[in-house]
Amino acid sequence: MRLDGKTLIVTGASSGIGAAAARLFADEGARLVLGARRENLLDAAAAQITAAGGQARWLAGDVGDEDYARGLVRLAEDAFGGLDGAFNNAGMVGDLLPAPDLDSATWQEVLRTNLTGAFLAAKHQIPALRRRGGGAILFTSSFVGTTRAGLPGMAAYASSKAGLRGLVQSLAAEHGHEGIRINALLPGGTLTAMAGDDPAGHDAIAALHPLGRMAQPEEIARAALFLLSDDASFVSGSAMLADGALSARL
Ligand SMILES: NC(=O)c1ccc[n+]([C@@H]2O[C@H](COP(=O)([O-])OP(=O)(O)OC[C@H]3O[C@@H](n4cnc5c(N)ncnc54)[C@H](OP(=O)(O)O)[C@@H]3O)[C@@H](O)[C@H]2O)c1
Image (cartoon, rainbow, N blue to C red; front, side):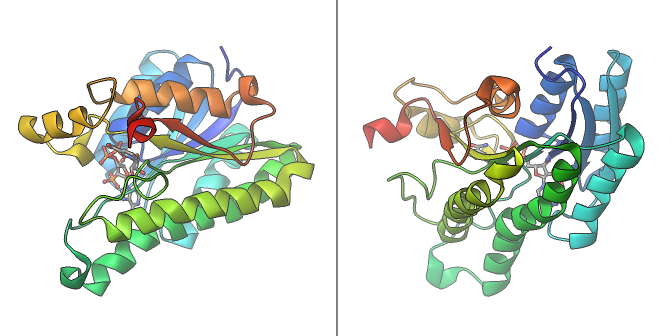
């Protein structure tokens, strides 16, 4: 029970890595506030956790909306009496197009969701962690944009995920003295909706990884569990790869 007694926010909890993390964190004793836009999936995820004996609430919204960031924190404090950490994991890829063909609205939407959303989350979570006397925040970045893995058609996504590393370093330096740890997790290709459902596409992504396959979302969730638990009590300001050695071979 590595999260026993802790209250955590998990965004992107309606699917993929976030949904797997929510199930795992609940099994490890956490009380959860689940976030994403699709109400039916959040409701089902919370019901599944409750049926298994855990505690979960949910609030649907857009992570790029500051009121939503504020609302998730308020729900954690109202429902469970405080906040101990957050897995800010919601993200999107957007159209996979060469930069000259990418419209600026898509660029803005990807940056707003992946990077501005992360900033807004931290902005409202850090004061709550401070009220609690410390805590941990984890962002889902990616091998894309952060290692030597430049991939065509991913200018907006790569820029947003690279930006998260700068955000992590800055926040970790700002809030370490308050007992607040801030980290980024960099998954490799993971079998979620984001990776599509084309087997040939999966094979091509799998082939990039020396482990010879894509990750299951549960494997990424276990890496997130480490970074949010007290097992990582001296890990802050880091960008941890869980990429099946992809970036080691590039
Ligand atoms: N799959 C991969 O290969 C891979 C690799 C490296 C990093 N990642 C990162 O891992 C994270 C999770 O992605 P995934 O692979 O689990 O994909 P996924 O199954 O598509 O999940 C994405 C999640 O983000 C939520 N989301 C997207 N835009 C949102 C918004 N504006 N407001 C609130 N929630 C939003 C989605 O929920 P709603 O649609 O219900 O809002 C969904 O729960 C992302 O940050 C992604 O960039 C994925």
